[in-house]
Amino acid sequence: MSGLVTIGESLALVYSTRTGGFDTVGDAGISFGGSESNVAIAAARLGAKTTWIGRVGDDAFGRRIVRAIRGEGVEVVATVDPDAPTALMIKDRPARGRTRVVYYRGENAGSRLTPEDVPAGSLSSARIFHFTGISLAVSEVLARTVLNAARDAKAAGAAIAFDVNHRSRLWAEDSARAAYLHAFALADIVFAGDDEAAIAVGPGATADLASRIAAFGPGEVIIKLGERGAYALEGETVCQQDAFQVEVADTVGAGDAFVGGYLAERLEGRDLAQRMRTAAAVGACACRGDGDWEMMPTRRDIAELIVEGDPVAR
Image 1 (tube, rainbow, N blue to C red):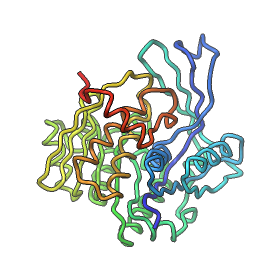
Image 2: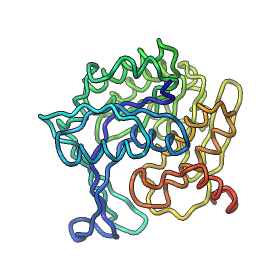
Image 3: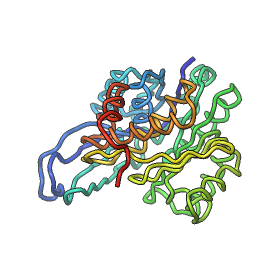
């Protein structure tokens, strides 16, 4: 069994290594990112068996992405597209404590992933299948691919996890809302920021947002609240998890880290409180350095964080 299977776009990343916009700063590093591959790496570092399915360009960035994800112990099923480049994101820091991300993803390889690129066997063996709202927004063919995969995985007995991960630059809220509600009805586990949940089900208190999403069918709803922690509803059980206090370098990727930690613990059969505690710890660790995935913690890292001090971010 492949514990966790994810499908989505991974992008090359060029990021500033010091404060200042790229209009004045020339110091940069090269890496990659992508919500679904970030989740797969986060879960793999905690010992979960994970698979990432995607499409990359026949270029240096595409080869780098495939090699790096495999190097993290994730099984990679990647179609190499000779006719489209790997997508690119640029991340700089125009001011201390502020991060700015710009995407160059039009007609890229990741957006061209088709149902034929997804091996049937990879879905039939999954225990959890995970996808995000980014895949629903990037292109029609990618949206069709992940939704078909989710339905096939669900029919084979997998739990379906969906993270809203709203991107306002990709689509209007009205279009996004309809897609999110459709995904909620398909999912067993839903993750959303409180602002993202409000796009789908209207504004309200955190508990109300979770209850409204649960009414569409998911048995587990997790509302991510950033530095305020997270709230979870599983049936009649409620869990409020505080954030861990860390020195923050970069918050990009923290939400994916949270999801990866939660799903890894779910695969281990942990109860809701433990899933949420681990998820919060993984998300906090991811904020302590540059890059989308490089600071994803091991279980030893999590143990050290928990021992270090008060887990409440004030």
